[in-house]
Length: 415
Image (cartoon, rainbow, N blue to C red; front, side, top):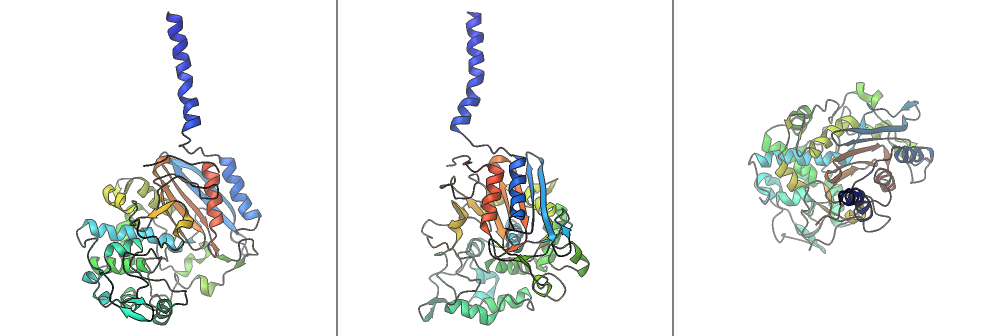
């Protein structure tokens, strides 16, 4: 009898692992060689000039790799202290700053925007050739989730033409002037009816200034960068930082890639610009931005510094889009995602072999020079993928995710 019990116990010990492997491929298994090969191929095939990836998992650094050049013409390789222009990866930082003020009771999410920024009191909606009153006021919640009806310009319609004429994000304006001009740009749609990527996060920055009484960049420095030890992060830079700055390269998906001239590349961050955007502009390093990502992975705190409450972060990383909001521009191209407050949020497993790999519950954002970060609580992981290639190349993101997760990874099913 004893022998039978021992034999059955031995069999039982082998079953869970085998059963789990077949039925629940939930845990990502990091393969260094696969990531090395992918990163190297991006550079050797001319898809980008240089790149790095930093992976934090299980409370420690799991992998850092770099390939190619930060400045090809100067012969300067990508390195850990390379300064990067992250463009729209600035947005999650701005969102955290604004939600800190929400925690302090400075505003309500469903407050009309004009309650705090009177320059937006006269907003009209463009409908056909007419400008009409919106069906309801723009709220702060709309501004946080890109449903206000604002634009970023760039199109040929009447709203985008008005945006171009008023030039609210001109680099010679400050945020106060931005607000005066943006408040005169008509809305593309009634608030709450459409997801449209826009200058809404620059409106968030103006809210931070107005509600805190501090200049936006100073507020972020004091309440995010300094507490997190992000010593290499900020907007305005001195020319002394230029030798560490990665060159931005321009070109089609398959090259050739050419260097962006300094006069354009440095315009927003180096001496001369007055504008401090909420939606772009931070210069940082992979290690500095990883500290921000690790704070998010740590439910709002890092190394004893509490930046935001877990409940607030949970709100920001929960899908905030009403299912009736079916017009979502290019957001569905990022995968089976919804949108919280300044973060895309994965809602379902990848639905096709072509979709970016990832785990339900992850939240992320990226930036115009093809840079990307994500936080994956299911795998206790944060990733920063850095490169400086424009226009935005989503194929690089698809490939680095496949390298980190495996091309067949689906992760947990979620709810």
